[in-house]
Amino acid sequence: MKTILVTGAAGGIGTQLRRELAGKYRLRLSDLRPIKPLAEGESFLRADITRLGDLLRATKGVDAVVHLGGYSVEGRWEDIHPANIVGCYNTFEAARRNGVRRVLFASSNHAVGFYRRDEIIDHRVMPRPDSRYGVAKAFGEALGRLYADKYGLEVFCMRIGNVNPAPLDKRRLSIWISPRDMAQLVSIGIEHPEIRFEVVYGVSDNARSWYDNANALRLGYQPQDDSEIYAEAVLARERPGDARAETFQGGAFVIEEVIPNPAPLPRAARLAKRVTPGKKPKKAKKK
Ligand code: 15L
Image 1 (cartoon, protein in one colour):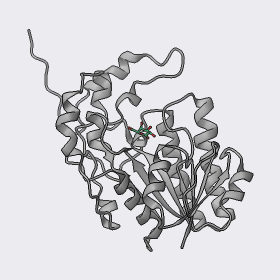
Image 2 (cartoon, protein in one colour):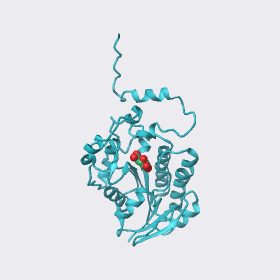
Image 3 (cartoon, rainbow, N blue to C red):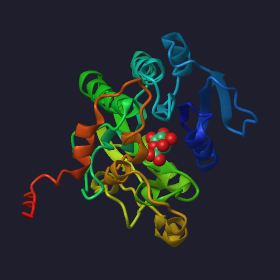
Image 4 (cartoon, rainbow, N blue to C red):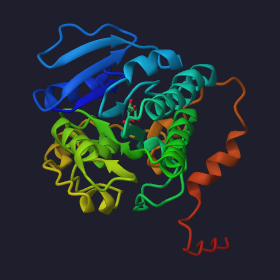
């Protein structure tokens, strides 16, 4: 049985994954917060991902790392930088030094959140982060590419939508992933023999998806769930929100600000009105 290190295992995704992966792998769970109770086949190792030494201990003897650790929403650079930039670097570097073959990186839809909702994007699009958090996810993907190309690590980047038993709102109808689909994708990331460097979307088979997830399907992903069965209930409780947030895939992340005096908003507001590239803008009617 393979031993898998899961960083950030006390978080939402980690908790749901543990349930789904139980019995399939020996899970070494790491986090700053203790995890109790542990199930059979699980062990806990406290690790601060901002410390390389902690990760060198945690990655010793594992077959793969599922790196979920770090800040999971937008935040101040002073918080994102240590947790998501330094922490991500330490994870890849510790894996390399300990000869761990494979790293699964929990990237996010927010690495590409500034694509519009009327666009279908695939795994080859340029990053278009919607937040500092999204920038850190794009950094993790780039770092993964470097470690794959330069050191031969096998790297599987999952641009995760939102893992939950059911979609929370209209935006999540497009990016939702059920816990069992998430676990299937993670298993592919651990088991697939041909992985060198891959980017896939961590989403279920949602009718309202704005992703072309061909790369995941090519690797054998067969999502079982579709958010559509929740659509009526979700839409019935949806209230109109901010126009910019509703224009872009990243939703509230595109408007959320954590710094004082953010850059002038009028220019950014114009972005939301911009036509899709390739389409000619309509001429304004003369009055
Ligand atoms: C994410 O990447 C976050 O980790 C999670 O907290 C959610 O905000 C999710 O994206 C989302 O977009 O719903």
